[in-house]
Image (cartoon, rainbow, N blue to C red; front, side, top):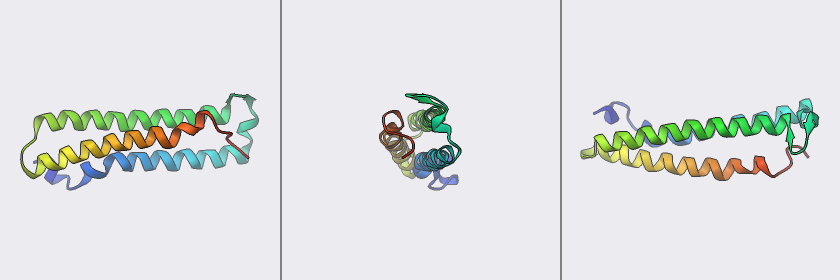
Amino acid sequence: MRAMRAGLMPLIAGFVLWSLGFVALYGLNAVGCAMGWHLLGSEPLTLQRLMLVLVLAATLAGVGALTLAQRREVGRQTQGREGLILRAGYWASLAALGATLFTFAPVFALSTCI
């Protein structure tokens, strides 16, 4: 019954967290380039890259925790419309976890400022 009260939130929660991390990552990249953070430290670990990796780690932790919580909830409720929403939400959060790894991984290899 909780899934119905929450509406479709289980379906979008993973990608909402992904999008918050995406905006934070690219916003921080722009601010860091403007403030010269890419010049502080030595490659490969400048202040700029360290901040971007921390955003990546925080986003992975958030989406991962959500995915695990949804997985536990799917184990408890698998019948009816609520179960369908919870199962679909779990798979959507798993996709958001993969999208986070795929879209944020370049912070390890690419130059932070051009």
